[in-house]
Image (cartoon, rainbow, N blue to C red):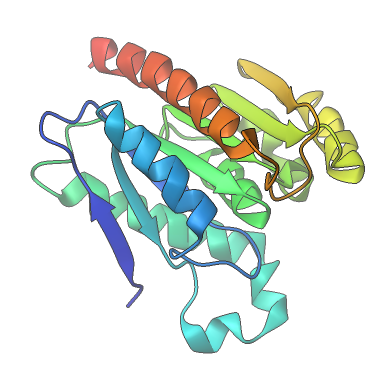
Length: 202
């Protein structure tokens, strides 16, 4: 049993499932802020804990990408079974290790119609990046040097539509004034465009 928070505005045009990063949870203020921005543009959001409290106490689980991806896939199945949500295209928003889980879960299937990574570690999903078909946006802080380089390398492994956007002056947690707002804007634009395209194909 995993706890989650679902927000579904009337007439939602898509659902974005969040995969939080290491040391975080569905209560992450950064993910909540992005989720609220997505709600404002008519997208439903699901923030849930990838691990139980007991599991999260074992640091190895936080970096067990196949396990996290399995939990994300299970949450996706739950969304698809919900009468009001199952007909909607699904997007994944991943942060830190959650971004790797999102890419891993989306590899080789059409579970997600779009993916956004915030300060993510897509390199941890390197063995499966070439199998990802969903349009993918990698957002990294300009001052997050190590993660920026890892994202550049991961971008070269993706064969789907993919972009790397750098938020200048931002560090890993995007705590600088205006940084997280820029992340939310980029995510809203990406999901709105690609989830709309997915709906047209349905």
